[in-house]
Length: 511
Ligand code: SF4
Ligand code: SF4
Image (cartoon, rainbow, N blue to C red; front, side, top):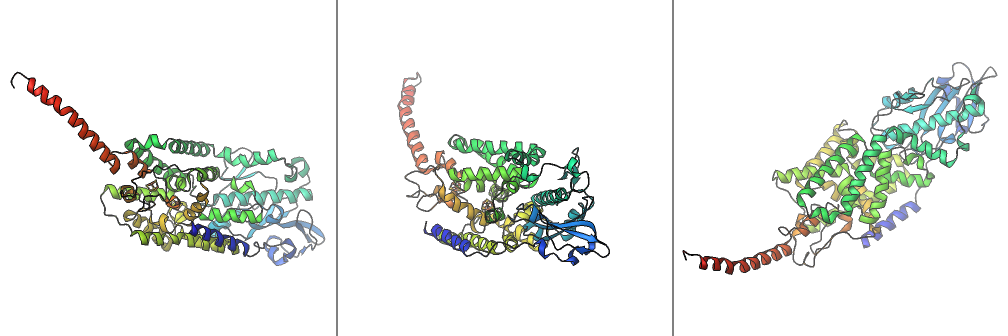
C-alpha cells in the first residue's frame, strides 16, 4: 500500500511541475520562404490574418491562394493526444496545392514510419479539392475519394485526413472558393448538432462492422467467462481449451488482424488529451481500441488489471502461449527467489514514472523511450525493423520460454499503470482456503506470475487473472486440503465396503 501511495504522489508532483503544453506554430509567424515551393514567381504574403485563421497570397495584386495551419482551424488531438501541425496551401479553385507536416508528437511517426512513407501519404492530397470527401482506405466507396493510409499508423492517418480536409473546407467556405462553393458546401462544423457529431464519429465504425461485431462478441464471451468462472474452473479440460483458444484469438485477431494492442503510449496520450482538451473524436477513430479500452475501464473496477493482462493483451498472450508450450515440452523453467522477484517487479513502476514525467515535457521523447515495450516491433511492425529492436523483442520472447511473462512481471509500464488503477477494484473474486500459505504452497508454486505470497494472499496488483489457482482450488487431485479430504472419504468408503465383501465371500458355497 505504501508503495502505491508513494507512486501516486510521484505522479502528482510530476503533473504539477510539468512544463507548459507544447507550443504549435502560429500562422502569424509564417515566413514567405516556407511557402515558396507552392507559389511560383514573385508573390506577397498578406500580413493580415482572416477568420478562421488563414493568410492570403497575392501576385501582382491578384489573389493566388490562401495558407493556413490545420491545427489552428481544426485542432483534433491525434494518437499522441496533441494535434498535428500541417501547413496547407489552397488556390482559388479550392484545390490543395501544397501540404507539409511541420510539427507533431506522434510516436509512430517518430519511430516506425519512414520519411518517404509520410511524404507519399501527404502527396496524395495535392490537387484534391477542399470539398472532396476524402477517406483513408475507402477506395471502393461511392462518392468518396479513397487514399492509402500509413502502414501501422492508421489512427494518425485518419486524424491527419480529418484535420486537413475539415480545415481546408472551412477556409474555402470562408473565402467562397470556388465560386459555386455555397451550392456544394457541407454543413459548417459549428452548425453541427451533438447528434450530427456522434453520427460522424460512428461513419469509421460502419466501415469496420465485422471488426466491431467480432470484438463485441469476444468481449461478451470474456464477460461470460468472468461471471461464471467458478463453473468453468470446475471443468479443467474445458477451461484449458477455452483459455488457450482465447489467447490464440487475442494474438491473431486483437494483435495482428485488428492491430489493437494497447500500449503505455495510449495512457500517456490520454493524459495529453486532458491537457489539450478532451474530445471523443480521436478516441473513437479505431473501434477495436475504443471497445477494448471501454471494457478495461469497467472491468478494472470489478476485477482489477488482470482481465486485460491475462486475456486481452496480445503480447502477454504470446508469452503465455510460449511458456505453455515449453511446459508441455518439459523444458526446465526458473523463478527468481521471492525476495529478488519482489524487488525486480518495482522496475516497471519506475519505468512508468519516468515515462509519465518525460511525456509531460516532450511526448515524442517519451514515445521513443516507450520502446521499452516490444509491442510495436512484434505486433505493429511484425519484426520488420532495425536489428536492435528485433533483438530486444526476440530476447524477451526467448526468456519467456524459461520464465513465464518475464517482461510483464518486471518491465511493463502499461501493466504497472493498470495495476495502480486496479487498486480501486470493488470486488474480490478469488477463492482462498484457510490452509493457503499456512502451510500449503501449492497455488503459490503454480502461479506463473509470482502473484501469491508465501503467506497465501493473492497480490492483486500482480495477478493476471489466469484462473490457474482457481482450477487448483476446486480440484481434489491438486489442492492438498481437498486431496486429504478425498483420501479420507475414499478410505471411509473402502472401510464401509470391506465387511460387505467379506460377507459375500463367507456366504459363497465354495467357502
Ligand atoms: S503486463 Fe504488459 S505485456 Fe504483460 S499482459 Fe499486461 S499489459 Fe500485456
Ligand atoms: S494463478 Fe491465481 S494468483 Fe496467479 S495469476 Fe493466475 S489467477 Fe492470479
